[in-house]
Amino acid sequence: MDQNFKKKPVDFILLSTIIVIILVGTLMVYSASSIWANYKFDDPFFFFKRQLLFAFVGIIAMIIVSNTPYFIWEKYARFLLVICFLLLLLVLIPGVGMVRGGARSWIGVGVFSIQPAEFMKLGLIIFLSSYLSKNRKWIQSFKKGFLPPVTLIAIVFGTILLQPDLGTGVVLLLTGFLLVFVNGAKITHFLWMGGIGIVGFLYLILSAPYRINRITSFLNPWEDPLGNGFQIIQSLYAIGPGGLFGLGFGNSIQKYFYLPEPHNDFIFAIIAEELGFIGGVGLLLLFISLMWRGIVIAIHAPDSFSALVATGIVAMLMIQVSINISVVIGLIPVTGITLPFISYGGSSLTLLLTSIGILLNISRYRTII
Image (cartoon, one colour):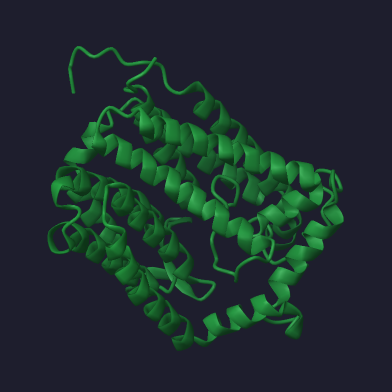
């Protein structure tokens, strides 16, 4: 990078969009969690205050990273990947990893906890972007160009499945494959890999009874309305009454212990119930704006590494948004994926805001005014 290069201002539309999304998310965490928090902790602001803290830490990280030259990440790409992978292994050790919802996905740090798989998302994006940009001439070779990054993605995916956390693994898998694809890999290689992947995916489903139950409950949730179909039924009961304009902020009925932990994976159902179709579509438009600016930044990035990093970050966000909302409205089985920037959670929010910081920094080196 030319040391005399005069950096441009950060992408204002992206920055404004993410600030609005954070404000919406923080307010909705309060609304969705207040009843549950008051019952469990005798403090209706319990989750709200923690989410504010996470947002504050995440915004500080975003500001710092947005002023850190993006090409520094390429220098430490391998180191970041190794650290993230060691954390993934560490979380599998009994007594170190914390079990929540049947998955050993967290490591306790004082009164808080971190989820290593969230950090691996960004770590893998940075490493793959570095590797692919340096080895692009081999990308159409199955052995030299396609197989090495796909093998790495498969190893990381398999490690996350040991927790088990299929939802996060799928987001990481799809993001990694998309990076390989946009770098110029042959479609025929993906077709072969896709065939193997479908067989493996079917095995994963059939080998775990709870995954089979999720599939059957998705196809007919009313067959077991108090068991496997409970979450999706309660989610639809929230979305339906919301109508066009919603019941009003704070007026959700489903958050009164009908929809389990409504401030997490199913927070979009509360948004639809309180803010209606208009509120739900408004949030989707904000995510579309974020995706649009991310794609523009990737197109006008100064080099292949930064273009791939920007592409990977946007892909990760949009894949996760698509999966979460599809689950909430009953299009696909429950996966345990949070809604980026909106659902309650420290690791996810701070990591995503750090990712946005990288995007903002790349925008400062864009090739157009």
